[in-house]
Image 1 (cartoon, one colour):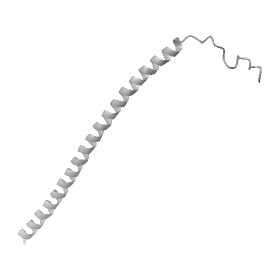
Image 2: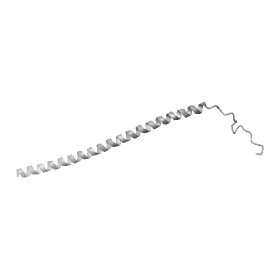
Image 3: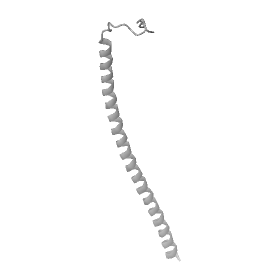
Length: 86
């Protein structure tokens, strides 16, 4: 009877070890997927930050150009008197 109990205990232990190994493999797979996702998100974020920096630089350049433009000698529409046929 002792051998039968020992075999039953060994079988239960093996089943628990197999279950634990399966859980570990599943966790390792999830971690690998999450690491890949984090790397992809980091790359996308870095790219977007670079684009934002470039656009900020260009916008500053456009603002400086607009500020440097001299005012026009033409009168504004609100300052113009309407033509006689109105």
